[in-house]
Image (tube, rainbow, N blue to C red; front, side, top):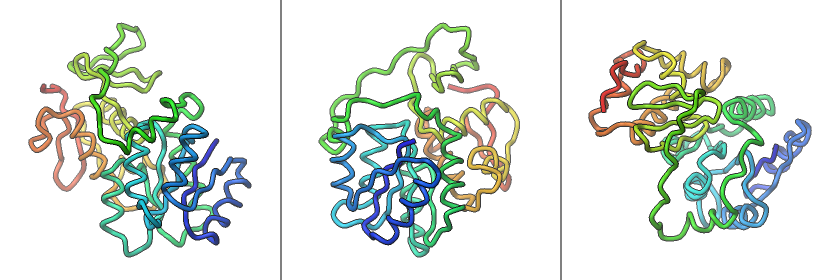
Length: 256
């Protein structure tokens, strides 16, 4: 598994590198966002990116946004300092799957990577051509129309949504909704339990792992991101309902 490690402090980079290699992972190192973009353009996308938020030049948040736009299925974990509370939320809103707070132990680092790995089909994708990363930082062009939902027996239907678990793809009517690995896991959990209220604690355990030690806000931010993609009016959600003081529920009637 290829891991892009973007960290400008050599001591931290060396610590992470050693532990990745011990776990039979292949680290690709960069000391800046600009260097990371060049490496990805030359070598293609990694499976997972570990991005420090505080970088010289382009910030880790800007790098996260560029990589997420170019490679929706890439796993992204942010490395944050304790005081960067707003940065954690912004990173999640930009598409990060998770964050690890410094200082962290080798055990926590590997647990977060393995948890994200379970939410991904590692090796089953390689994304678009490497030039897509450079394009993600340029002025946006019209996006190509996503593929229509296939009439496959493997596709489960809960109108107007169609779910293809084998391909990890989701459509609303005939429009494909592109999801990150974490968004996919969360959507599948709620769709599998349509009409049932699922607590934040259960979502955290099922999606991020039983021993996840992060904040519950990671659930709320991901729900907000998903609503932007599936709701007709995200400010008045009718598909993913909030169960106040408890969690969330996918509306069985699937309005829209």
